[in-house]
Image (cartoon, rainbow, N blue to C red):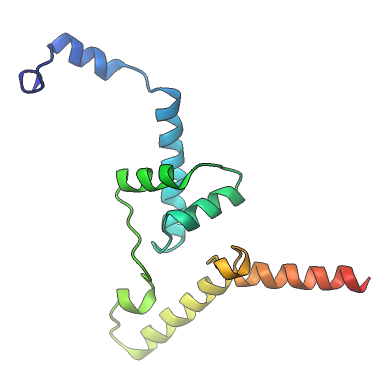
Length: 136
């Protein structure tokens, strides 16, 4: 392999032992957070929604960095990769259960840009809290 890339063996093994830079270490940690959010979103969130979720959790980074890391770890979210287009069901009852599960996830966890990047349940809770404060 060293002859193919035109590098001495000692230089190659020295390179392997080299510690990660601060940026490389941060990228690895951020990639793990991105993977977790991606799978928590049922593989539907792209870089924009993942960025919004990361910001809510206190991690700031650019869309480009998130996009680059998603490509590196092979996470690809397509436009509207939702429930029905992804699965086939053996029976109607299985389909009903999947739809109910999807509705519960959609209302409790999926963030919506038109709700200020909150889930419908978070938005509703904030709305009623504001109503209580204005009534008091």
